[in-house]
Image (tube, rainbow, N blue to C red; front, side):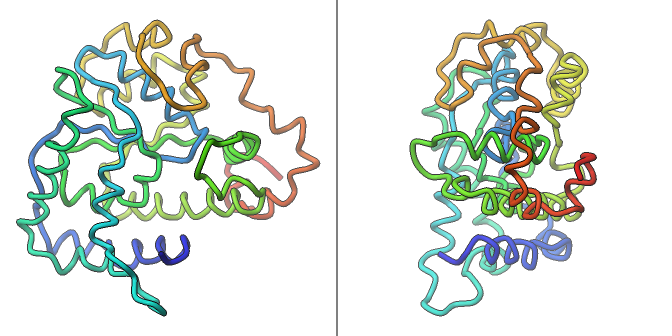
Amino acid sequence: MLPRFQRITAQIDVCTEALFERLGPTGTDSPDPIFIVGLPRAGSTLLEQILASHSQVDGTMELHNILDLAKRLRGRDEAGATEPRYPKILGELDTPLFTQFGEQFIEQTRVYRGNAPFFIDKMPNNFFHIGLIKLILPNAKVIDARRHPMSCCFSGYKQLWGEGQEFSYGLTEIGSYYKQYTQLMAHWDTVLPGFILRVHHEDVVDDLEGQVKRILAFCGLPFEDACLNFHKTERTIRTPSAEQVRQPIYRSGLDQWRHFEHHLEPLKSALGEEILSTYGVT
């Protein structure tokens, strides 16, 4: 597999406004999936718990179906290749295949669902593949869970992960990952306006009801009080935030990074002034 920055560059180079205009309407009409994407420790589990508390939404888990489809489309990159097969192949496929892929996704994920008309896929790394999601599931909803860069990266850095998340083991590495993620999300905002709802964790903490209503409106769902009382919803959660989302909203974890700020200069350097200045960090 090519390095991450090359994969992101490839998405930006291939998934352009011109590509989506040329392909036109594609995919299956199913509105069932709600994708929650972002970085680990950005508040995605909280958003999942809020939505899964709604009577019309099934919470599932971090599903691998989109990643598996991208892997199939990528095939095996040839040695020395500077341009990956995926996502370039998206511009070469017959458009009926996008409908087939979308229908396969809906069918293959039924095993994780209950009886609700909508369901959540909370695989964070799906942010790489929002162009693919748009082509195969144009009526899906995508929510980007965003958190203050220093808070998000520090929380990810100090978390001992069971597996994966190799980028989180160094301050420079996790800062670079956050920066590349925001660059790709900015691209999706440009080429797919209105397809993604960005939800800042700090806004959810400061105004839970307002943000819940905003999220439900985006998903086309009526307001339900259960979404405000998300901590009372009983369901299996398999992320490090499992215990946190079984408590009411609290603020104590927002600025923990400031206690260690003098150790975090490599992280600041990797994030860069453009990102940090947006959050008032110098």
